[in-house]
Length: 353
Image 1: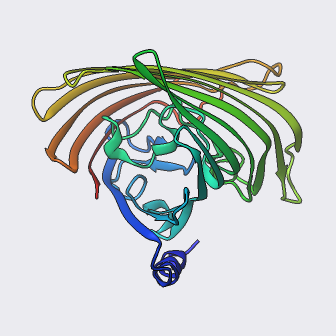
Image 2: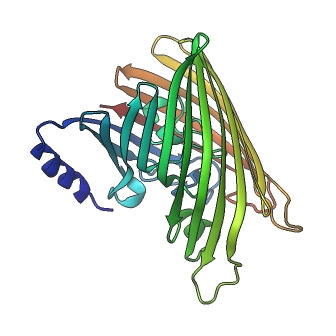
């Protein structure tokens, strides 16, 4: 979607003098390349097929976003977010567009288009400034569907000495000619639908500790539109997704962990992350280890399995900007041989405004 919605928003909303409109934004300028054997490839962003090769490129992960929030009074707000990516030649698309109604100080109803809150970093994945690495590890954040159209009921309250936020959500997403499936996995036009999405997520914070648990269920449809296809269409495949995260951050020591499990009649995967960091003034060196492992559900099917070991550094050289550099070593252990082994170096600047 082109950037005309932003111009429309700016022209229309000032007509209503009582609407308090706030703008915020973020950007990540990231470059990288593989540094192992020639012709190696590193798939840094599964959902959008952000690939690095042995030529330096700033296209796979450079991203800019702008969010507008209009307060319409009486508990009603409208939020919209546009994101431009190097992979899309910096054409803008809407990633958020939803209404929020505050029922009471603890309860909010939202409806529209949002990011699926499957995992800890799902809802702010594009905001690189919000986490230490160049990106949340691709071994966990690999999915072909990122958004949904639907509704959520969000509740926030105190629990003991901490705070508990829960979200119950329902919806659907239709992806025509899905980028990951069409251009990477099957090399032919592939449509994907996640329907009857129903999920619940709970986040608990207590001092320096944060935890997350979530569960989502949906029905998956996948269709292949090529006349010469040999692929089998999938209809009403029931999928269950479970996730948990435990994090500790006291401003000096950092421990981040996450695990998720997908299961259906056709596939099952277990994926995990462990990362540690140590803050020295404005600089944080960090280590991260992650794994994606598919279990056999269909006899003699090629299986996907890969691990990533990362070493990096974040330098907070400005209150609203950080420089990062990261080395990744990817080992492809599956019979599917998705991308092969590779080593890559990426660097960039994340900022918020």
